[in-house]
Every structure is written in structure tokens, then in C-alpha cells.
Amino acid sequence: MTADIISYFRDKADRYDEVDQQVYWRLSDELLWDALNRHVLEGLPEDFAFLDAGGGTGRWTAKVLDAYPRSGGLLVDLSEDMLAVAAAKRSGDRAHRMEIVQGNLEALPEEVTTRSFDVIWNFHNVIGFLTDPAKVIATLSGRLKPGGRIVTLAPNRYHSAYFNLANGRLAEARNAVDKGSATFTDDMPPLRLFTPRELADMYERAGCSVEVVTGFPATLYPSFQETQIEGSSKHIVDLLEDPQVFADVLDMEKTITAMPDVAARGNNIFIVGKKG
Image 1 (cartoon, one colour):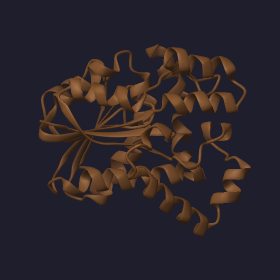
Image 2 (cartoon, helix red, strand yellow):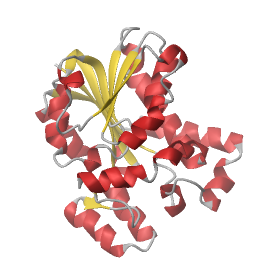
Image 3 (cartoon, one colour):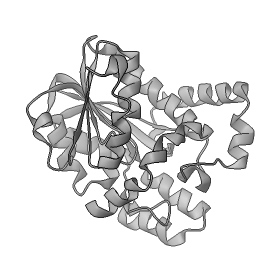
């Protein structure tokens, strides 16, 4: 499984950041950035230390370092190819505040196990590619300072069933429902999927009280083209390329994410836990 994951990201590493050009993922990123700031980062000390677990090309490490100039971050990822792209972001004002380490989240490197953090996050499919997600969440939680936060953005089991049916992939929809594991494309390794309750239970077993559980985007779902590095579905471009419409959809999404029962509808599930 590990070899499959490394190969999967090796083929995508050089172009991975092109996701920024896809209007659907710009919407998703806006929502993630808003949630991360509002629920977590704005309440931390100015010089907070963070761990970007499975941070790949460093998109979110760089974004946080730029927005919070006194913060410092450690980026850990399994893929040397993804980290080579991240290394190019370690420049200018970020250079002395951005540390990059190649390592496996299921056997954390010494650079992680010998320090503690104000916040640790793992975004998108990271948790889905783990053999034992609950064990990793518990181990990462152990590296939090008292009162520190752990944040996960995880693939939604219910959305995977919908997505695969919508794209004529009946067997993968059945896998999502019956096994809690599926793929979104033919070249993708099997991905573990989650429900809001499963993630909350995982956090609680790790000794973290759940502060936020929501899901997004919840009003607009990706189509097959959004699973590719480039290109966007015509109906999504036609809707979101108008800046005013984009702003309206973003505003609706922000309103809905505050509703307590929206998590199960989101394309991804966002959860924040606090270490006691």
C-alpha cells in the first residue's frame, strides 16, 4: 500500500499545485482557510508552532507562514517527490520558519516525537491513506501542547458513494457503503472513508474533546474532471467563473457550515479537537 501511494504522488508531484487553477478547489480552499482561521489559528499565540502532517507540496504550510509571520512550521510527508516541490517554498521570510522532513506518519520521525505543537493538521486524503488512522490520530494528539488543537479534513464516506454512482462507478459506490473504502479514479489507491461520528469517536479516544465538526463544500459537489490535476467541469466553470456568483456561493457555504447537522453532507469533513 505504501509503495502504491508513493507511486501515485510521484506521478502528480510536479503539477500538484495546479489544483489552484481549478475553480471548485479554490472554493473548497476558501472554506478550509476560513474554518482553520476562525476555529483555530486566530486563538493561538502569535508565535504558534504547527505540524503539517502529510503536507505534501507545502501549500498550506506556506499559506499559514505567510499569514502568521511569527509562526513556525514543520512539514512531514512520505513522498520525497512532493517534498521536493515544497522545498522551493522554503525561501525568503519562510526560510528560517519552515522545516521539511521526509517521514511516515505511522512511524513518526524524531523531529516530531521530540517536540510539541500548538496545532497539528492533516488535510484532504492524508488520513484516508493510513493503515490505522485512529492510532495515528492518537499519536499525533500526544505531540500537542496542553490545550493544543488537532485538525482533520477527511474524505466523506457518504459523498464517495454519491460521487461514484454519479460517475457510473457502481462497484466503488458499493465499496464506499459496505467497506468504508473506495477510489475516485482508476489510478488512485484505495482510500479509507469516514463519517462525522467515526471521526468524533476517534478524537475522543485520543483524549481530545471535539470542538467543531462540519463539512464542505456542501451545496456544490465536484464532478469527475475535478479529480484530475487540470481542467474543470463545464457546469462548475459556468457557475463559478462569475466573481459575484462565486462570492454568493461562498457566502451560502459559510452560512451552512455553521449549521450543526451539515457535516454528513460535505464533500469533506472538517473536525477540530482540543487536547485536555
